[in-house]
Image (cartoon, rainbow, N blue to C red; front, side, top):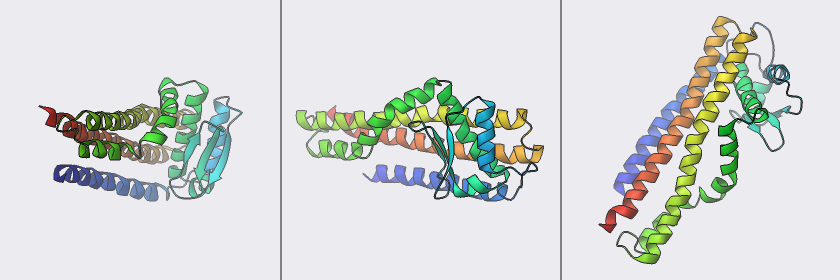
Length: 231
């Protein structure tokens, strides 16, 4: 278990560094006021309109960095700061979330796959590690049948969560690319504002990358615990 704790600790440290940098970036670019004076909500509404999307509502949601697109009720949910503010960070986040709405409207394959996995992952992700540990305690590493299959079931659950994390990567990167292309092509931001928006979205994407690497590392570690002891 010591190796696992070292692994998780290292990944947690990297995750903290990336998250801290992301927060600093957003604070920095929140001070870069948009020359067009538009709020995040107005940016979002215009991007949706420019893509011919009329059935998606832009709403304000409590919290910080709680921005997300909900495909079930077709809402772009912007945190209060993003919804009301008129700066490069708000423009980047608003456009990014609208990028997901555009993906949904255009039936983007990676988004469809991620959405299909949501019901499974929401049930299995929280219990997968405990199922694996339970299987090991029942003798999986020693080759005992019942414990082995319990542990394998836990690994399958963990595998779905890992797959979900990696499918999320192209979804998030594509949404950011769509946002940046639109901001630039529609002259919504100046060169300085565009640079801030691009930098902020890059760091936001890296949080998903770290999460995916962490999920894979955890899956490999527990897989070795289950299968390594059967030689």
